[in-house]
Image (cartoon, rainbow, N blue to C red; front, side, top):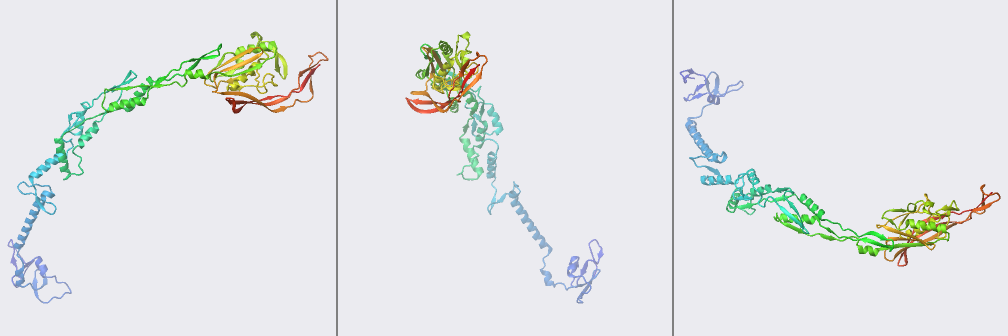
Length: 558
């Protein structure tokens, strides 16, 4: 191996190999051509070279093969061409991929498998259209309430509109005329709101809504709509909304002031002499429906008649009870009479008790008390001693006999269909009424009471004349052809105890005997109210039950 000078004038034999054919190998070329000799490997004794280590070298290619290898200049040319192609591709793709634009070079882009050149004028037109379409302002050609809101943002347009009144006005005053009397419902009493936001949204949407049958890109259709809007401007107007609840409340107030309820005819007095009623006149009322007032006022406002007049008329309301109806319905409801004895004192007491209750008015819903009406039957009032029943015996008592008045009253009251509150039978049946039809009284314990269960006052007319007691009840009659009578039925008879009961009475003179209690049968009686219609019985109902005790004959002696 021959040492050759290298760059820098240094000689170095390591890393160079000169073959017999004059070719010089360097570095990796030696490693590729001369494999390393390892132990155990045997190579033919071909050429041996030394570059610091001993290697077996395969024979080099023939000169014909070497001539086919391209020189480095060719490779450099190929690399340069590739670089030109890459630069050209970059220039072609950059405008589309990176958004670059070349001022002195054409700009291209791929579109649907084709290369297209950018049209600067069309691009400028597109950019201008897009800038006008894709904006946050209202498109040109829109006004609200006479205010041009073109090119304004929603906030700017809102501020403009707040400074001007609604196109329909900002106040109202509706007059409500009812039968010549007038009320006013106006904006000073009714809160209002204005639909500015709704109109702003409508204005902003104009030109932005794409037609379903349009052609072209969305931007092109919007731009066309915007151009049409600018050529044919649109005008919007805000409207006022009214607080409906407040208007309804005001309508109810008007209706309440107009309302006049009807007044029924009423009983004003009772003439004791003619036994006739006097009546107060019925008065018709008037009514105004609050909903009607509200609906008419709202209709006036909704059609924009903010200063209109609503004319209404009240409805006449007839009285529930007229004077004519009362005249035909009031009179004597019932009457009952009993015969008295010829005892003067007793008849005096009956007359005084009749006078005490005569002409008394019992209001609707009130309870009448016989004891309260007559008071205590005393000598100071003119009552006389007369026979009365006490402890099963007949005794002399001031005011004796008034039970006939209370019993007669009981019969008249029951036949007038008034409610019996308190009633007690005598110790034994009375002769002047049937069994079960008496009502005993005694001051202050035993009392006869009844309730006026009608809706009208009733009057009591009681009189005594010629040994006859009569009680009449006046008020609202029971109905045409309707009357009530009483019937009693003995359901059980109680036999008097046998024998005579003797009782010592040392107050009697010696050897004297006196019968104090007579033997009497007892009875259990049921009394019925029987209803008649034009003389025919239509129903009957139990009124009361009475028990009369059986008495054993009693004799006192001394």
